[in-house]
Amino acid sequence: MKSSSLILPAALASALLLAACDKEAVKPKGESAEKSETADSGSTLNIPGLKDEKAQSSYVVGMTLGKQMAEIKDELDIDTVVRGLKDELAGKAKVTDEQGREIMASFMEKMQAKMMAEQMAAARKNSEEGQKFLEENGKKEGVKTTASGLQYQVLEEGKGARPGGNDAVKVKYTGTLLDGTVFDSTDKNGGEPAILPLDRVIPGWAEGLRLMPVGSKYKLWIPGNLGYGEQVPPGAPFPPNATLVFEVELVEIVKAPK
Image (spheres, helix red, strand yellow):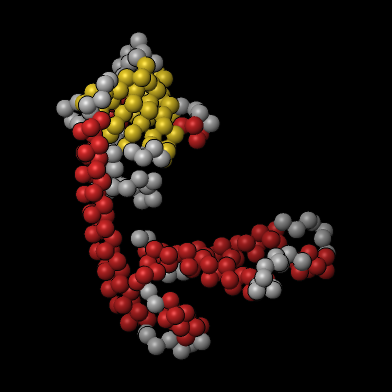
């Protein structure tokens, strides 16, 4: 849960203002005010129940608020949210700013505790499921398991040098979850290889790439403890303690960037 889910950020107001400014900026030079107003008046979309620009803009602001509150909607009484909005705009708020800060701080603490509990539960579940998968996967022909728990399979064996821990590598790869969902791939960047310093990647990558001669293509199964663990990056396309699968082609060993 992001803290921005709790309030309408200043960025929304800024975005609305910038949109208005941009609208003025794109008018052709020399265009008369009368012509501009005519063009603007015809810009309202034909949306049932939202007859004019004010109605449509108001609705979109409401949609934006709704999207931001989606993650915490079960913790809120939406009718009371609307009531608070109306009272604040009318200058009749029943809660002082000081009381509001106290209430919000308590609410945030509660939501953060709930989020942490959910993350811990998900991490345990993913760890258990990943371990079960790896136990079975390790029995398959061609799959090798290292002392750390990393699993790999040689798809193509190259004849070049193996990178060291202080090297950087140029690689092509595709990363998937255990269900086959692709969450990252160099194909997304037009198929261009990525350059990665081995001292800055997750442990499973660092270990797996050091096993590969240049020109090789391996499949890696990286358990959660050799991946991103319980603390995944914000907005990550995989859950905590996820077992990640990569098909990696080692194109070249390159000089590590400073």
